[in-house]
Image (tube, rainbow, N blue to C red; front, side, top):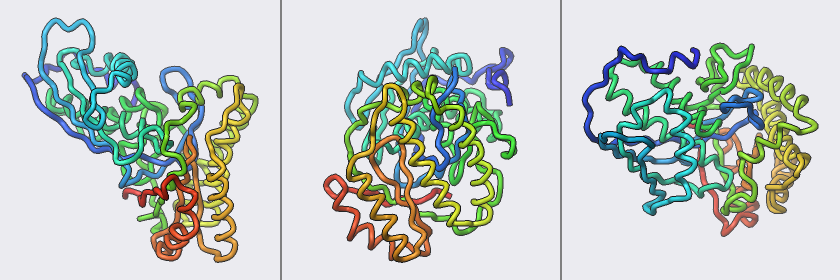
Length: 356
């Protein structure tokens, strides 16, 4: 689909909706092949692929009331019950970006109530689930105004809108495995929106566990937005984008074949590459903590000693996502509790899994 297909046609007449309340629960996702760097209008510089999670989610409630003569966007936002004026500029920018595609948002006054099931801004993709949930609420409103839109159009446009708020949010619209970014080896892939992984996935990856170790629950010292911008003049950018797209081809086969050894090698390399790019940008920065490295070394040692398929990945933060198959959950969970929690802030962790 092209951008113009998401623009409402003038001949479409909306139903007379006066007020209402909508809800969306959207999970976070953890990228296995990372997206780091973007072009104008939230277009990715490389294709990315992610697991969508279950326990880490954003729940958003959108109350709306019809208004007249609205020159600007009319909204208030509450996060976990408290008014958050600091969030308004980001939402205003989002509304400005999507107005062309959902012009009816100026016809309503909105109250946005949102909360996370996990710590905000700590490297668990809160912007992905947050913007994904808001985009779904807006699409629910569009569905009420224009009931004849198809489910396929609904999902693709929700992902398209979410992308304009946060690139990774485009992937949170879908369960399981999602792909965002045009790639010649992925049928139906697009830079404009994410799609569900369009191939059969090996059973070993179903119910795949992700135990998130909260090394640092505070806000990141450098935002992902700033990090993406630094890729524009990064000395290793071109090679990184080639590497990522090659890894998409590799992981496509891995997910179908159930090759755990190759899976572990690829996702850990991707995680370390992401943070290597941060440390080699100008200005450079470090988001991992000493305890992040302690956990990684413990995982490597345990895997070598037991030959169990435990692995890790990292998002743009200090926290560690420990990934492992359902069939080994008891042994690996015991290891996590007994050996890794001492490196977490207040021994905090989240037990999650892939949402299939």
